[in-house]
Image (tube, rainbow, N blue to C red; front, side):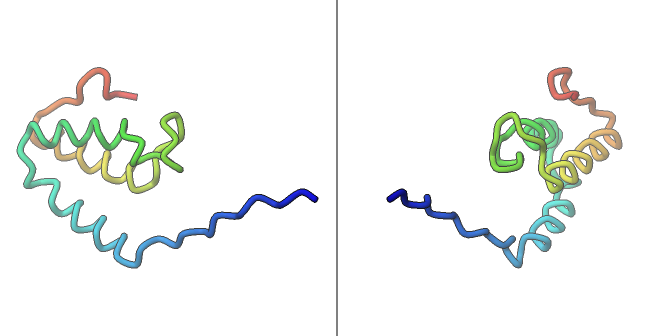
Length: 87
């Protein structure tokens, strides 16, 4: 007899996830330049911001939102993304 592998339960998003995202978006303009550039890169390269944490997977919607907000703020300050950050 073959056993069916256990199914992992689907995890619902945390109820506070949207609130946390909005708070982080509000915080971005207060970041120092070096942190802003670093986080712009991190939002696009970290496995934490990829679907299923797959290093080659697509970015999550939240990652795309955060990355765009960081890039907008960098533009307002006259900062540019590092060449290896651009996709």
